Image (cartoon, rainbow, N blue to C red; front, side, top):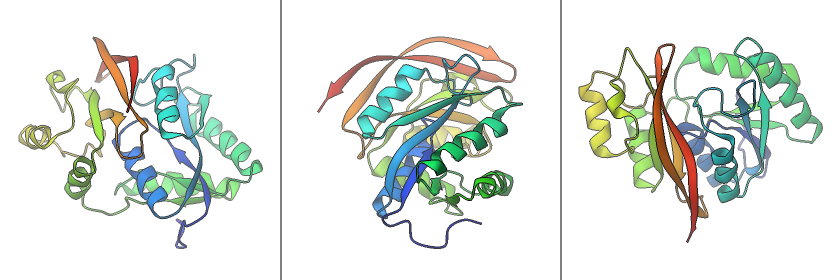
Length: 229
């Protein structure tokens, strides 16, 4: 089960997508006194892009640099995902990391998977966002000064015109008007983080082409340059 003990002073890894929910979970774990040791991201088989959000490795590395937290990469197909993830957890456990932070909000099957795979390695999962109101989390995300851009939309749920849009009050309104949950918890869209209160510098990205893969539209992005505050 999830940790019922405070995360204060615990060394943890964060399951990292590069998007808004994993980042907000990291933020809250840090605010509660947890000590981030690394980010963990599963990549495509060739190791070039993140498995779920399609983010290039260089951009994820720049996020980690700006956060001041090392990032660990592993590559897997969807069929191999769980096996590779558990293998990575074993290595983290051997390094003395006993807690994992995850950005799930309220989908029971997602949390159940996390609890099950962490139990295999005797790692304690921690869900800082669990059962919080979805819209409240979005509003908090914006109010804290985090910046994110939509880079994936599910084609049968959202028009690809949402690709490249920043998460803002206006975008939240338009997502609701489009008939989807504004938080994207059911996979309606995914984001890339570009700035926030725990970043030392803003991540500058440039948009490239839009591509279709199965039922999803992807906005390809690349690291532009870094702007140090």
